[in-house]
Structure formats: structure tokens, C-alpha cells
Length: 142
Length: 228
Image (cartoon, rainbow over all chains, first blue to last red; front, side, top):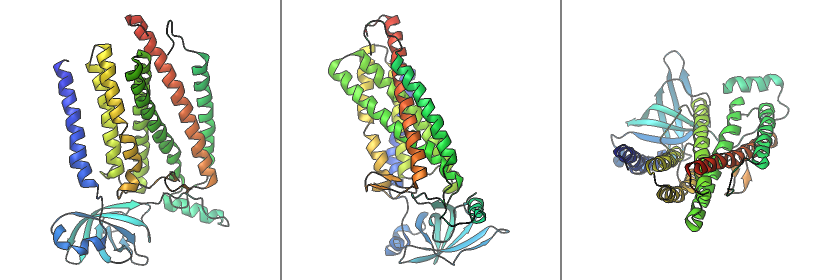
């Protein structure tokens, strides 16, 4: 085989190796729940973590001017106040599953990356919705 | 697959034409399917994304089966089908990733994250890219076929890992909407119909292209003087 193929092969093997041992190793536990965090906060002290949970209903406060977003993240047992800066993704709303990347400072979790987890269930709007309501739903989804 | 003078047969063309006709029907169904309660019309990316993903898996599985057949029978035709299937699988996987990224940005909020499903897909694609590097690198046809067969057979382990990744590990990716593990369908009937028709179209087009590529490869081999 020619040298350039060996180099190419090395690059591919290296990339795959990096993905498996570097990327996959770190992303296997892609996020932790608030309860898991508080079981052993020392383990994550000073480290960036991804917290996953549900946006508690009635706790979302968003100021479009300053892009400050505050809500309470819950896993059903433990609740964590989250401060985030940035426009929330379109699907962000109450009772939605989210993953926030960031750090704890005291009791408050400061997120800098917000991902929305959506369900695998796809359903059209309920029957009985008026066309206006359907249009509003679609507008919101944009 | 034919021995002496390979020619594109009516079946290949028929399957391709049928595939594209079904694709038109799939397009119509996809564009007339209702919007989703949560994400509106964005859900329509699913019909492309999932159909490409599944046929991509199918293509890699077929590549592995023909690689095994090649190692058993030593017939170059099996190697050619294996390579054709792997190549189409690679294109389908890239299409799946492209559609997935278009979908992820407006729903999750990002184009890409290194989470279990996406990472395992990246590994899968890297391995099949490596498959073609191996094919390019080795000149001797028999050596090439054997090495490629090894990659195709080892590479197929990626398919169950990728498929199961959303069940095994915590992932931002949804679990399957046509849930084969728990035997449930989480989709409205009109959406399910659109997905299944598109899946059929992709499968037919895949089959047609594998036969076509196999035929082209056979002609090339015949020209280069290797007995098919």
C-alpha cells in the first residue's frame, strides 16, 4: 500500500478511536438528574455538568430584552432553580423535558446551553380544535 | 451477479421506476399528513429522516451478509454487491444525518451534540468511510475483497449499537416512534402511513440502485479482465 493510504487509514483509525474512547465515554452518561447531583455534589464540584429534567409548570420567567431565562428544573423529587441567558428553543415550555449545560453556583444552576428533549409521540392537534387554535399551535411551533 | 456478459435487466429498471413512483406517493402523503401538536410541520422531516436511517441500516446489513457470502464462496459478484450496498448505505446515512440536523436545530436547539445516538452514528459513518478507504488502498482484487469483507462484517455491529443507543443510554434523541422493542406505535395513523410509504419507496430505490451498481461494477470487472 502507498504511504498516503497508510496516512489516511491512520487518520480514520485515530478518529474512530477518539470517538469511542473520548467522545462516547464522556457522552454515555449524557446528563444527570438533579437528584443524582445532590447525592454526591462533591463529585461534580467546579465541573460543568448537564442536568436533565422537566421544566416545572408555572416557574418560567423570560425577559426577551435581556434574554434572561429563569425556571425550575425538576426530576419529580429534587428541584433546582436554573438561570440561563439566551433565547429558549422553540419547543421550550412548561412540562417539557430539557437538558441544561452549565455549573452550580450555590443552590442555583447557571446554564449556558439549553437543549429541549421532545417525545417520540407524534399526534395531530386534537379533534375539536378550531382552525384558529390549530394555526396558533403551528405558529408557536415555528 | 450474472456470469458472462452482464446487462442491466428489466427487474432492476422496474424496481427503480416503481421506487420513484412510490416516492412521489410518499411525498404526497408526507405533505398532506397533519402537523404535530408539539412541533407543527417540522414533524415532516421524520418521513425522510427515519426512512433514510432504516434503509441505511438495511444496506449495511446486506453489505455484511454478502461479505460473508463472499468469504464462503469466493465469488467476486458477492464482493461487488457488498460494496454497492455499503456505498448506498453510506449515502443514506449521510442523508439521515443531514435531515436529522435540520430537525434538531429547531426542536432540540442545536444541530449536533455528542450524545449517545449521534455519537454512535458518527462512529458508524466513520467505519463505512474507512471501508472505502480500504477498498481504494488495496490493488489486488482478491486481497481487496477479503479486507473489505472483514470491515463490512465487523462494521455491522454498529447497527444494533446505534439502534439500541436510545434505549441503553440516556439520550437527547427520542426513542423509536415505531417502537420495535416495546411493540408500540407512537404516531397518528396518517403520519404512520406517510412514513411507511416513504420507507417502501426508499427500500425499492435502494434495491434498484444496488442491482444497478452491481451491474456497473460487473461490467467494469469484465473490462479489466477479471472473471465475474
